[in-house]
Image 1 (spheres, rainbow, N blue to C red):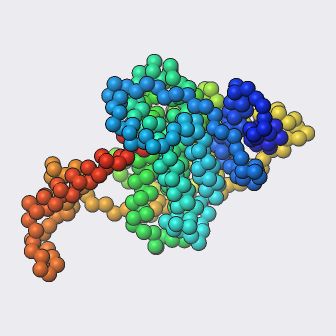
Image 2 (image 1 turned 90 degrees about the vertical axis):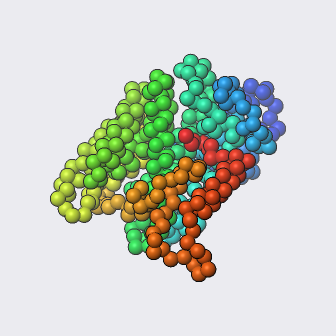
Image 3 (image 1 turned 180 degrees about the vertical axis):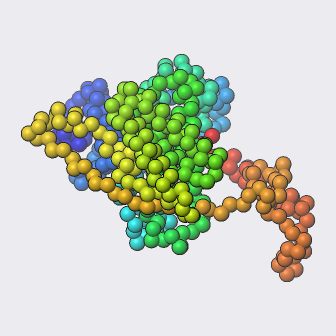
Length: 429
């Protein structure tokens, strides 16, 4: 970024340039910016005192819609929002990723402010992400992309668009996976073990379940379409998910353990594939396998204990979760030479005994009545017992009354969602 400043890449006013030269300068500036942010370092107005940045580079046009998505009704929902192009939204989202990377580098260090506080780093990043999502036009979101109808030829022909589009998706899901990483939350909540709100446990559990599944979904999609990706950040995202799946696989539930293990190996295989092109991805895959060996050995030693703990070297996690730690030290040595190159200190072992966060309480199927076919939100109705108490002056409601209430209320909710922008965000199946 210092080189970009010295070259005045951030300045456009007063420069007489051809459109091609101006566009090249913009691409150079924002490429440097993007790389810096992906390595977890952001820049602010202090780097550019005048607060002026070049315009975003020109983005590739959107691919033509598929037959089923060529419905103009959806496009009207975002007609009032200016489309700055897919590259602009990748650059914008990278700013939040840089903040998230800084959050990861704290290694879950406990704070006096719990993550559910509006003043916490966790909440500030989550708020910024939601604000950024409101600025994302519907046209660049998951549903109108209709990936299920795109052939391999479609994807290959428009790699100029699908490349940044996929990076945008992976950035979004990876931010949420890192924010809610079970290890980071478990460490950061050590001072609040007895006061963790139930709704926060449900919130973080649901986000992890949803957004790890999205990364797995894209990996499966690449395999089904035989679509070869080369962006190493996608491999990093898969590695983040792999650490989560590995940690969650240490459970007494056999089916869950098997499912999590399969997802872990799927992510490792994806990283290994990228490792054929990128040496640092090959190193990342090796680190994942070493992490599995170390954690598995620790868990087996403790298998006879009543309480299940993982005695692990946390530095093995940090060298995976910190994207910049996977860079090639030899390339820096070759660039600067032995006289200028100084090798980064090797982090010492950081052994910690961790236990999983409390499971959020959830109603099981046997605790609820079967859902009425008229309900459109898949919400279970609590069991009403014969001796149930009701407020004074209110008679015992019949199932018909509940049915009418549910039908009216939830149908109105559906109408409300249809009139606005539905939950078709960066990625929702």
